[in-house]
Length: 254
Image (cartoon, rainbow, N blue to C red; front, side, top):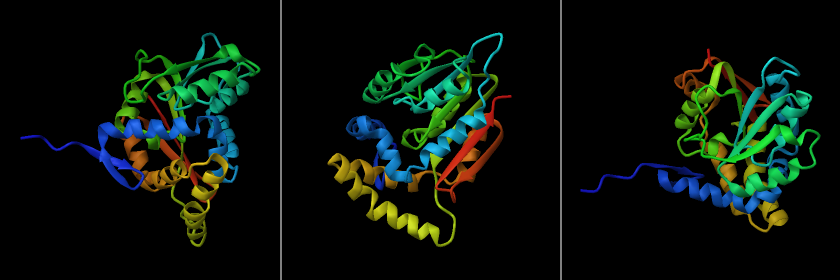
């Protein structure tokens, strides 16, 4: 007798757990060269403010007696890594990791023009099975990527493993608007504007349709915070941005 296959969601579709990663890869293969534009469309450009706030919250040091190492997961295009390195005035060392080679290609090319290009490295890796040693990073960041991971809890467990004691995790993710009235406006914008706009700009509405649906499938802030606690993180908190269009989650490995 064949055992039933483990399933998960891909937007509104129910798919086999082992199939989701390939489907997500196809989405980001199609939008890699326009990824920042994609986030501009989905947030009306405000994602840049949220990312700046995330890096300000991280507050990477500008000097120290040992390297300050950050793992930026699902950070292929490098926009978070560049912000962290600049905020540290070139002191932080950021490993940009992504499962999608096309996203990494875009990031590595862009990094050539950064102020501190030598402070970043680009590594293809799966968030669920990181190729890094235990306790090897001071911080772990992931922006708008965790909801695309098939086994989110496994990825959070891996984040905890690779962080040093005293290390911090910061997760920035789209959330579910909770402001009465604004929630209906944002829902209509997501359904009726983002996919057609994506098609107009990139020629393909499907990736944008998936990304809109994936936001609605992501756990609400209290549930995701509980997942961080389950992974072993302490002092977990979440901060809503812009009426909870996005949420910044943080926790410490103590």
